[in-house]
Image: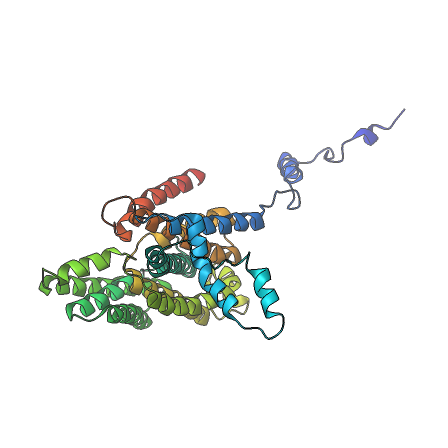
Length: 395
């Protein structure tokens, strides 16, 4: 006859084991291991996100008051490359290479001058500017939220938007040109954040809280200064121009704006991308980051400086556009988790695609163009309310 002990389950506790120990053992044995848990396929999600952003770009070229087909838009965009390749005089096998490339790079123009001008002079600068501004604001918002460890922080928390608005209003008040408005707005944003940082260094206590409060203080002062300029501005031309600029729009975007903003935004985004793994460590807390050898003060300063740089230049060419830097980082964390190695690249792509869609609606839903700041508020506020409700249910 078999021994009674040989029929005992491997998870059966010996006699006399206290109930709380048996309960704890059952919980441990029933918990799945890390290897058994399903890991999301983030690579597939990134591929889908890139395809969605590319679709937004294509849609932005074909929608508008001037109808342009997809094939015409693609041919117009490829025409400079085709003309350049076909015009190059190669000493060896030149004619053969031209003949082989002629089916791939057609040079026959099937469009008129008006269509060409719409694609290259109006829609291309606007699409590039929208993607750059959206990418800059969303990435800056994600960086700020990680540095301040607060999901309600947005890129204008340190007064960059208020300072840029004051600079633009000042340039419009003195009848300066479009380029000067951009430069003044960019400088105003940097001055505002620099002032907030200087004030925070003089405060005692928590340096993060001091910087946030200093940003609110400085932003309030610059907003009041902008309101005074609007009060004394000419009501016929200056006041409408200031008001429309503050509501945000890309209607006047040019390739010069794209070149200026693109260089500065890329310079600001590269350090954020390279430091994204250190941002993960900083989100664990100040003491934990210091114990791992991270210079938290220097890291926080670099991240805030880069985020401020891209925010100021984005606002300088688009005006004040809210909610992008607040809502898009939340979506990135919902889809790609809380790892900043994935959140930062996702914020670049998702923010650019989101603002492209909003800009498409801004120039098509009404007879006159709707400012971007109005649409992003209409779209962002309900989405953020939904995120708050979903977060409350989970908690």
